[in-house]
Length: 132
Image (cartoon, rainbow, N blue to C red; front, top):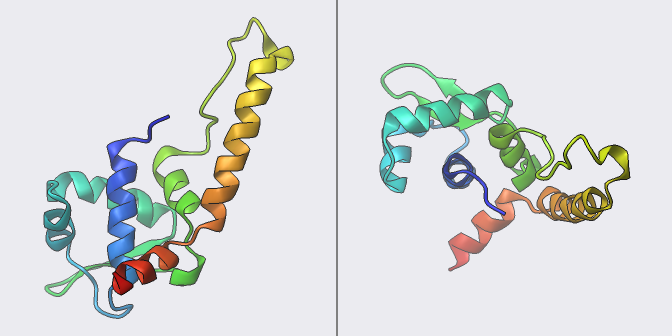
């Protein structure tokens, strides 16, 4: 199973923002350089996070991005859904429909993974990173 590179960049960007000052916005240039990605590409990812209500854009000379939600409330699953959407990772073709036993196994595995990601807060990873 793979998530897109956009999800990778979104998770790392959010980790930076969770660790940053809640008042002072972080510029897109800084966020992009820290991950070795173009600011234009990262801006598209940031737009999705803004639409999901996790961050806000601050205009002006000292503008950038900062969290718009309490950092203790942001989970890995929130970020993944903002980038990847909520669609199931596996779908049986229309021939099998609701009787697809493989779909049932895959759905159960996906639910366990989502439960883990929902219970894992980004702030916990940020705290571990600061201790390292």
